[in-house]
Image (cartoon, rainbow, N blue to C red; front, side):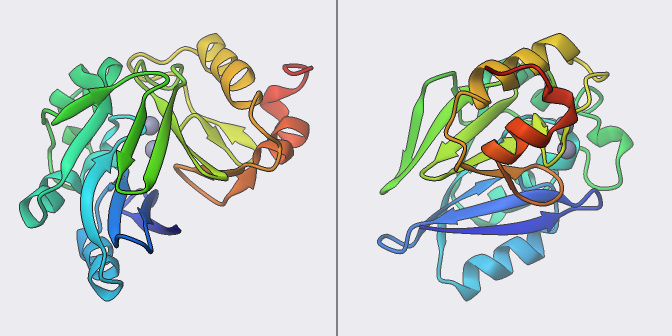
Length: 210
Ligand SMILES: [Zn+2]
Ligand SMILES: [Zn+2]
């Protein structure tokens, strides 16, 4: 398995392309724009994209979706809690951002505990509401993609539609800090971390684990 981080769109949200060296199939997480960079990476590496997964439906994570769907026969998946946000450009804020205005329906929805597969790639869904109603993290092998739930040394904002501070802290404390310290955290913005580093060093999580 290979994971490539491609900061995408004007907000430089991290798009991740996860691909299998066995099947050459790939999954694109959170394409927020820069479709030329994403498709360039896919083509240079001979990766056939089969699925787009969203950690949540904010504009900076979805604005590349319509263009990618024009080029590739990919299925789009989102947590059912973010369906309304995905469909409504003023709720997902793409109408106020630099880039395409996006209001779309997914091809499928998922929920907590689901395991999504693409060839030999497996994505375990952890529902982590608080930044948005349908925010999720994906565990893939030794990695966890955390979207705007958890960043290196910080957490997501909670002042947008569906956001709630206590819910976000509970999601992280109960569902992410229960994971192995060695798991590599791949956030929606900024550099990578590990669950262990965040458990001990993230100022927002002090006193929230045992
Ligand atoms: Zn967000
Ligand atoms: Zn974001």
